[in-house]
Amino acid sequence: MPVDRNAVRDRLQFYRELGIGPLYRREASTYLVSDRLEISPEETSACDAALTSTDNTAFVNTANADRHALLRIIQDDIGPNCQRCGLGKLGRKQVVFGTGDPHAQLMFIGEGPGADEDAQGLPFVGRAGQLLNNMIAAMGVKREQVYIANIVKCRPPGNRTPERDECDACSPFLMRQIQVVRPKVIVALGATAAKNLLGVSDSMASMRGRFYDFSPPRTAAGTGEPLECKLAVTYHPAFLLRDPRQKKETWKDLQMVMRYLGLTAPQRPPEAG
Ligand code: URA
Image (tube, rainbow, N blue to C red):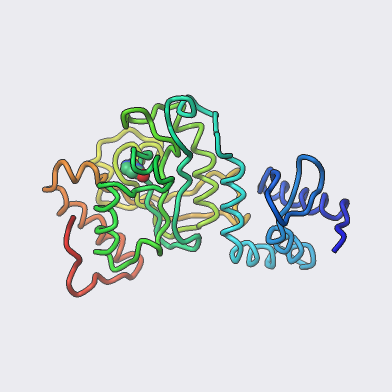
């Protein structure tokens, strides 16, 4: 079907006004707009629904139904060879974007990819990831039902703590992911995640055991609706591997989250990792 370039340009502008984009060149089955700009069929249909509606409800609903596409736009914005901070040149193999259900009620945010994550391109797939899987299963939820991401998307060399400028360079993309997924609860895994998300530098002891109200900045447009969710802090699974006695405390944090989400633990909790 021939595509009216002006109409597509208008749609792209509409996306931009909502804070979505910029939209970049895509591989097969995309509509060529110019040498630089293309829009995929699923993005086009989201725009179509939005443009034919008389208010913005259709857009919000369409966007809700199209969170995969919105997350892909963010991933494309980052690009496969991001150089926005020094980590791009410090030996990382790939950008580890995040994974899980784009409609998840529960989102876990860790610190940054380790060697296994860097190799596989997925967050929390190494030893700490196995423990996180067990924590998720203990909550009566499947890993595929939650969304998992990190403060930084590239592996810091030697698994060092990511530096301020590295976290800051990655933060706008994480905020956009949160705005698209719209979780009810975010669990910050460890002090780096907690401090970066909350903008504080308190001790783990003082940050755990309570909920914070969390809103990604309005610039992190996703569905266009402001998002308010709860944020809980707990120990990082890698720390729990070093100090398993803290698993009991972690379980208390997770139970607080479960109560809020109305989740009940399975009868026989899966074996702790
Ligand atoms: N530790 C993290 O903080 N994130 C990962 O993805 C893996 C280990």
